[in-house]
Image (tube, rainbow, N blue to C red; front, side):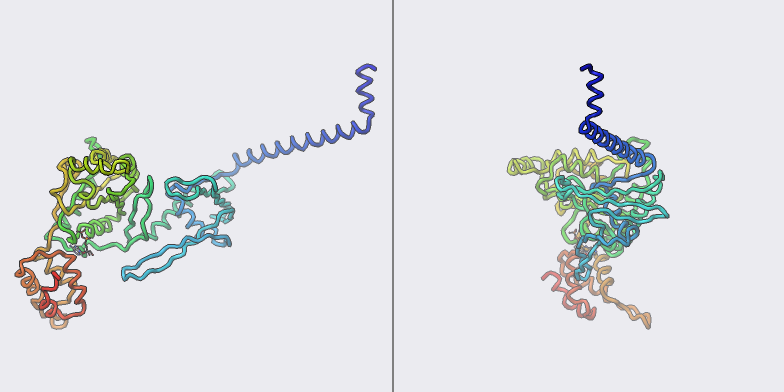
Length: 427
Ligand code: ADP
């Protein structure tokens, strides 16, 4: 049989015909499916826009909050983030923040439908935070990127209003900074009583620095300024820095140099990625390093445990460069224990002593706690002066923290009684 006849006879075979038909349908379906896939991809590319925000991004939490409160308000699938807020009275309030749960949600924003996909990778961890890797993807029809800018900006503004009038504290977590606790109510600068014009002097120095970006730029000097506050404990170093940050609308990034696991590289990285508009605070810098000699011994003792080295710190301080103003505060109770290399100009540009109370401070502290004089008659009394005299004649130094503790013990007492029991300050 010739080949032509063989094919003709196969075509007449009903089994073969059915198989061929089925094959044809299958192939057609596959082509159609592929075509549809391409069409969907083409449609997505040409007529849809998506925005992916990974959990490492600063906007991530803001966006989730915004979606819950402004966007997908009607979504019934939420997850909760519980936190505790401690008021100044010591009262602890539990706060529940709802955020959209993992999955898809829909909402309309300025007349456009937006799909939200919150996904969580079960097998990938965010190594810095130690939490599962998450992303939020917003998808919408059209090509208008401005829509997403507007949403992100609204989310940022919403987050900012939450911290208005408050000071945000950050702590180092892995290679990044994480907000520490809830933002605290700003401490007024006037509530920290320093000697004479010390407070104004430091404030005006910082303000002057913040207004000199172009001066630094033109001269090629790194735009940073280091401050060192030293003096006995309880005299207001930390309180002043907190109040200063409040006055400037800055946050505070607190770093403990003696923390284990803080290596030179990590410190360097942290200093370079500190959030904008924050003061970096290295507290009790003397406890991390004594002097170069001793630090060698310390390094030897801690060999194997990751610690920041003295030379590493110096390099980090020299390397802190950013286009944003970088303000670095260090505090110590013992100036004499610091290596001169650490506090040379460029690393520390302004050193200020915050010491025990002067007469002026004692009087101010007293006046802050007790109303003196008669508001009705306008008559003034001399309780503050008497109190100062009593304290000074004891010949013992007194810190504002000691005075505060003493006044709190007698907060409802008559000023004359407070003067009488003055010896209890040193109990
Ligand atoms: P330091 O950092 O110098 O050890 P802190 O700022 O931690 O001192 O002060 C401890 C406590 O004493 C705080 O509660 C603070 O309110 C109070 N205090 C210390 N110094 C002052 C000051 N100069 N004016 C008002 N309060 C002060």
